[in-house]
Length: 281
Ligand code: AMP
Image (cartoon, rainbow, N blue to C red; front, side, top):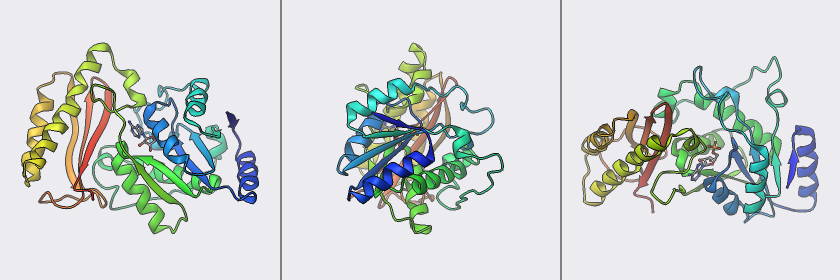
């Protein structure tokens, strides 16, 4: 597994690969990789070469969030990448990505206004800026994002459309633990007791999904059913439960078309997100 830390070197490698006619798949991550990330890498193997970026992006974390404590282990990540079949890891230092007088940002309105964009102000400005930079540096043919971060996927698709970025964005399904908890690097923060309590998120969402499958069309009723299941768990504190259009992330008055049912819940001090999308063709 080749590890590249500078923009200059990755550009040289990518340009050699392109000269040879190779297609490039790109998987942007913050590292501490698990099977969710590995499934993205495996999807990206449809390209000739697969690049994984590992970068805990300081500008997408708000004050008081977990930037400093976010788990980091590059040796472990190199193993996970090679196991999944990636060719190269790009892991720049923050100072390589952000010069002291860095001052250009990608600022989106619309799909970023609600859900995580609302409760984590500035988060998507940081995400869009870093993903745009990584796209410019890596210049892949296709980039792979998880439906686990469904709003992020909608935001990146919108950015690519609006800014005419010539990269195909591929969404990949949520990978879960055997007991249903969505895999996340942040699950490592959970104590044994919290890990058990975290199951309430998927349990509540599954209840909501069943309501929709049984014909419920009223979003408020579904949100309130999900809310009461989560509120039964003493260690859980809801950040938001929302039902929105999966592409525009705007509020819907009826369950119809591509609908995203999204939850952000604190389990103790750890903020976890999960969702399901319904009505997809
Ligand atoms: P992160 O390292 O958390 O920023 O995630 C990097 C990419 O992996 C994002 O596109 C995430 O949506 C995706 N991802 C994270 N967890 C999962 C999961 N459990 N299933 C599928 N994709 C995931």
